[in-house]
Image (cartoon, rainbow, N blue to C red; front, side):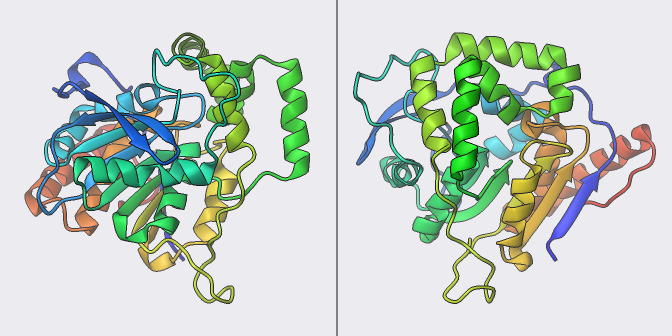
Length: 336
C-alpha cells in the first residue's frame, strides 16, 4: 500500500507577521495557447537542471486566494529561491478579470490541461513540479497523463478523479437555483465543520470570492468542472492496457474534508511504489491555507526524495520538527 501519514500535532496559526518570508514580487504574464489566453504569475527565472514549480488553483479561487498562505510561509522561501514558480490562473479567474464575452465557450477540463504546454514552452521550461488543488489537481493530473515527459512530480490536494454522474449534475443544478454562487461553492472548498464553526475563515473567503472573482466567469469554470469526465487511469495490472501517473505523486487531504473520498479513490488508481498519501489533521478542506507549515514540511521531504533538497536542509528541518513535536506533546504517526 502507499504510505499513509496522519499527523496529529497542532500547527501554529498560518500567516502571522513573523512567519511571512521575503517573497519576491510576482511578474504577470498573458500567454496565448491553442484554447485561449492564460494569466500566469511567476517568481524567479528557470533554473538549470531543475523543474519549475507550477501551481493550479481550485474552483472559486485564483492563484492568490489558493496559494498565498503557502508561498508566503517563511519555510517555503528556501524552496522558492531555488525553483522558478509559475502560478496559473484558469481563464477569467484572476483578480480584476473582465467578463468573458457573450457566447464564449469555456475550455473543457481536457483543454485546460492542453493549455499548459504553452506555459512550459513560453518560459523555456523542460519539466514541471505541479501543485494543484481540487479542480487544479484534476487539471494537472490530466496534463500528466497527456504529457508525461513534461511532469517530474505532482502534489495533488483534494483531487477527485471521478466524473460527474447525471444525478450529481441534477443535484448541482437544483442547488444552484436555490443558492447564490458563492454559497454553492463554499461546501466544495470547506468541510461541514468549518462551515459551521470556523466562521472567520469561511466569512473571509466568502467575501473574497464575492469581491475578487468575476461571477460570470466563475460560473463558467464551475459548470465545466462539474461536467468533467473521469480520469482514465488505473493501477498497473488492474485493467488491461491500463495507464496511470508515471511520476512521483503526493496526495494530500485534510481530515473530514469534503474531498476525502475522492482522494482515497485516486490513491487506489496510482502506483503504490511512487505515491504518498498524506492525511492532515486539523486542516479542514484547504490544508495549504490552514496548515501551511505542515504542507511545507511534507513538500520538502517530497523534494528530498526526488534529490532536490540537500541533506543540510533536511537536518535543519529535522531539528525544527523535533522542537515542534516537543512543544506540542505526543504525536501519532511518523514523517515521510
